[in-house]
Structure formats: C-alpha cells, structure tokens
Length: 424
Image (cartoon, rainbow, N blue to C red):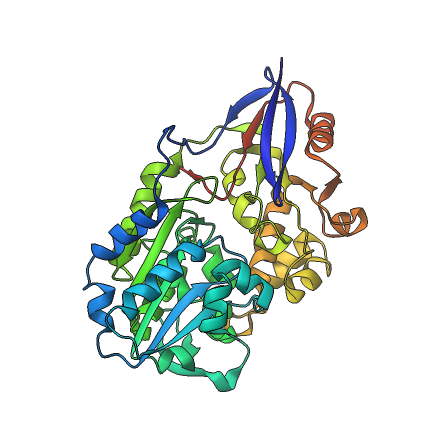
C-alpha cells in the first residue's frame, strides 16, 4: 500500500509517496489533539506576568529612558505580530516617555526589507517605532565589551550598549551546533560583530562533540554565547515555543539564562525522539522561512545524520527559493571537492575564520560520509558542482536512492528535521 506523507517545502507542501513495506518509520513531534486551540496571546501574557528569575518587565521598565528590544530577522519564524505589541504595551503602561528601539538581530544575514518588517510586525509598529537592522560588518558601530571563554573579543552593537534596559524576544528550537536557538543567541550571534561571530563559529568550536543539537552543557559555542549575554547586561527575554503550524504553544520570560534553560528543557521533553536507523533517510528544513536558502539547511540535515546507517543515503528537501544564501557560503561550496573544503577549513586558524564557513564544514563532512540527494529549486549543474545529487522532486529522489541502495532498502522519514531532537 502506498502512503502519502506531506513534507514542508517553501510555503507549501511536497507529497512523498512511499510503499509502506519500505517505510521503517516516521520521526515527528507528537501534536496534542484538542478541540480548543490555545490562546497564543494569553500564553504570552501569562509568561510576562510570571517571569522566571527576574522582576516583571513592567517593573524593570520604570524610569528607563532608552530601551532596546532585540528581535529575530526574516529567517526565523518568531510570531512578532503577537509578541511585540505585548512587549510594547508592558513597557508603555509604566513608561510612556521612554525611547524604544527595535534592533533586528541579523547576525551575519542581510538586513530585513521594509516589506519584511511590515509582514513581521504589522504596519502600526513599522510606522510608529524605530526599527534598525544590526550590521555585523560595521566596525564603527560595534563596541568592545570583554573577552569570551574562547578567547574571542566580544563586540556588540552600540545601540544595545547604550540602552539602559536591554531585552530580547525570540523562539526556542533545536539548533545543530548551538544546542538550541533563543535566549543568549539574540546577543551572539544576533547583534555581535562579524569577527566575534566568526570565532564563535570557527572550525574547532564546530568540531566539538558537544556542539550538537539539544546539548548546552560543555558546548563551547553555547558557553561563548552565554558569556556574551552576561556581559551585555540583557535584563529580560521573552521566548516562545511553536508547533508545526508556527503557533505559540508555550512561552518563557525573565532571566536570559534561567528562562531560556526552562524552555529548552520543555523542548527536550516534548521533542526528544529515539533514532530510527535506515539505509535511506528523508528530511526537510521545516519549510519557510528556514528553507529559503541552502545555507540554513545543515539544521534539518543534522537530525537525519543521527538516523542514517553507515554508507547510507540522505535526501534533503528544501526549496532554496532565495538560492544558496550567504555570498561566502555560496562561493566556498563551489570552490572545491568536499575533501578539499573540509581540509581547508580545519586548517584555518580561529582568528582567520571566514564568515559562513561553518555550514560548508557541516556539508563537506556529511558529503564525505554519505551521498546526499538535494531536492530544491536550485539548478542541476549548481547542485552537482557542490557535490550533491540532483532531483527535481522527492519521489524522483527516492527512486534514485533505491537504484543506489537497492529496492529492499528501508526508509526513515523526518517531515521536519529542524523541530526534532534525536536522543543520543
């Protein structure tokens, strides 16, 4: 019997048709079936009213003159249309005169366009609030604040440095080398200098066995991020957890370390799933916005790597509607074989790290172990130049995988490779 499995692909779905006899298992987060949909606004209000490890935002905002709210950029599915108005209301009810700046944590990504800002925040906030894109490459606007555990200089956007109340919103999901997104990531890489981000993401840091999905303890990348957050004096965070429809199902507010850690623990309990090993593993990058480009796709690939058998085949389904992503990433991916790229990156000193090389490191290491079939909007010649196998759709990709591994090969499907945490 043929089973249809919906896979997120851009802002739509791609249908995988698979013989149930060949399906070894589907790895996905169990969604609670309830007739009553959660009230997203109330979930956030409850979190703001009961902060973890800190005073309420309203108390913190009293008499403050220069407040900065750090928020995520267009590559993250933060529901700011809900969360940002509530943060602003919480501040304004005790402090009508404060200057409030919304600072977009671009990290090393491009800045958000006006259209993307309106889509994210709504026209009212766009028209009434000061919204500024962080620029990691603007050395004049990034100020030195201290030294991180890795030895890196911590440099942060001066707009945040000059705030007398620094807060951040975001969401928590598994992250393939930082353990989890959210919390301290709003500061580093969010509003840090390019040099600082590059060292944090350098090859020795990425190569650490603790720099992996769902792990914070002993993770050198997390340790730098946590140290940066402490130095930044960020006073309050609001982080949400989302379901597969990008709806808020939980929220944590308060101290950047304590609130974030509690949210991460929630996610581990909810999304931690045992591996199902197979010769062929199909994964996605969760659809839009995370599958806009190939640069983001090691996230979805990381869960599949925990499920594929030795000498197996990975099928990565991601629209890549905006192409490869970062300029450095695109150039590097086309500049050599996986072995050449991997050797080059590992021999690069931390201080000479090139922006975006970490994703090239992840892809090249994976391509050295496994054949990877890429289903995307990218041109066939480009896909093959980077060392992947091209397929126009997931069913064609599965046929190719069967030809390579044999018709008796079993298949594991991970419909959203970003959301799950494969238990080690």
